[in-house]
Length: 343
Ligand SMILES: [Zn+2]
Ligand SMILES: [Zn+2]
Image (cartoon, rainbow, N blue to C red; front, top):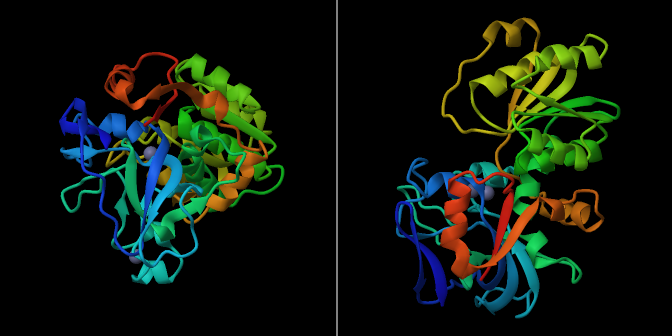
């Protein structure tokens, strides 16, 4: 099969590779669409330590069942499917508690930290365990299905946050994850969703996706503005989708006393924290990791147009153009959001 292989850092090549082997509980999926994730772009130069070559990246994918392992009896070749990016073990303490995103033996498709190497979906075929596969409705386009993984991050973040009908939410970061999180917050009953970013083009996109307000944190004192909009109290909840000190501080300072800051972004391993603000204003800091079985919910929300991803797809391209699209994303070409490759 053809695959887009990271042969060394910053070097992607189309190569001929053997089709992946499948175990008795696995499914071989013929990949029809696979999105390039920000974490692939951040990881392919070696900076994240989670994409050690040689590796086929790609964890936001959809396709058709090509072959089934001996124990898989509830799928047929040709079925249209997508799959979670997290491969959980199903056996550990956390899996038993239904917290599969916190699995002790968690592996991620298309990722290779030091401990394991799991080839992903920038290839004609990928092997994945049956337990992480979800069927797609016939009318659901493969290209949009490739974005379910990203949607699930936002849906999970909102579903573990105490959101009530009529709440004001602040969403920091209007990239892919911020834009799906803000739609999930609206769907969950927030009637005011304030998008915050440093890029006016992204803020305009956020307004198109339903944000009621947009604030540029380069030119605006965001917490002061949020206080003005909320009768002097601050927002009920903030979703931080960037992950370094400044935007986290903006989130903390924008919520009301007793409010929640849900931390989704994690670009830096450590940040400076406004400890006294958090303690004396009794703010809850809630981490959110990947998703925990929200795929069926996401498929439903997307097929009914409650969460829209089509406007977030900047380009569709064949796998052979993968290397050049990675370069363009890596060089921060403006107005590029999601690029979907079609192997
Ligand atoms: Zn991703
Ligand atoms: Zn587990």
